[in-house]
Length: 424
Image (tube, rainbow, N blue to C red; front, side, top):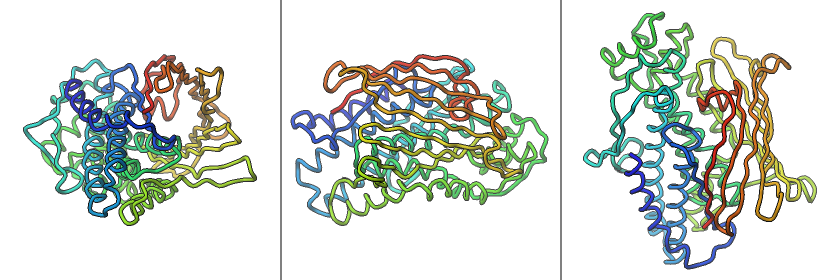
């Protein structure tokens, strides 16, 4: 599978090679980051791989559009727009499918997967075909109930994580290109699309089974319900929690529609197709001459305990920026906010030396007031090797953190992560 992803990487690199012939303005630069760990075992590594391929292709399309003057014609823009849709839907599909393997692999289960060049599929947008995905049969008996439900929804949670990364990319570049807008919207609305296609409130099995037996019965007797959303809904029902697809849809739409970046991205797409400008600038509230506040991004993650809603907001004071996160589990039977919550901040790009930037962060978790029961604390370091290349090092400690340990399935404890970043 890694070898086949390398084929995509080579394709993306060839597409963007023309970039190095011409220096770029700051907002036209692209940044890629790779982690030195297996993307089949980590949310963050998966996102880094998706972002690397995504941004390489985006840069190639940037250069093709500007250097060949294709953007002057609405029909030429439509061709570039379609090319962006094809690559975005393809990369989103692979990232989603890969995410389902985390929990299995972290439990030492061997999983074989590969791109299937013999069977091309079009799962999201009619007419856009790409190689399918082959995966060995996974035995749910190797996981406990909690792990199995996590493995069911990791694909959709990975899509939400990728949307958050796409949002960050646009803010860092201070522009929203049509390709980045496509990346964000296709990932952000993946849960809405999935729930709409599932469209079932069937409950053909009595509650109280083992989750493993439930999945076997669904696969054997009602295969039309064997998808991420219905498996999640029926697993909750089996545990005594009755939630409908309409309720799931309302929760997903709440986060998507309330995010201002959703509407900025839609505007960027319409503007590009109709008028031709390549990018829009993210909106910011200005307070005086020195403070600017960007509207928050709302994210919706599915967990065993309920929906984890998280809001992320960036605030700038002159050259200093901080990202504030406030999140809460919203249960299914007792719908109350902040019965279990996560709150914290991350300082961005603090300059230590001319070659060293650091980004400290801390997020605390609690229940019903100030009863703290979890934390995520760490330090991201960016050490420049050259103008375009940097070494990445992150040291972090996570303990019962809603995002890191519950959503991303990271192990409790300390970990160090290394990687590389390139700007082109």
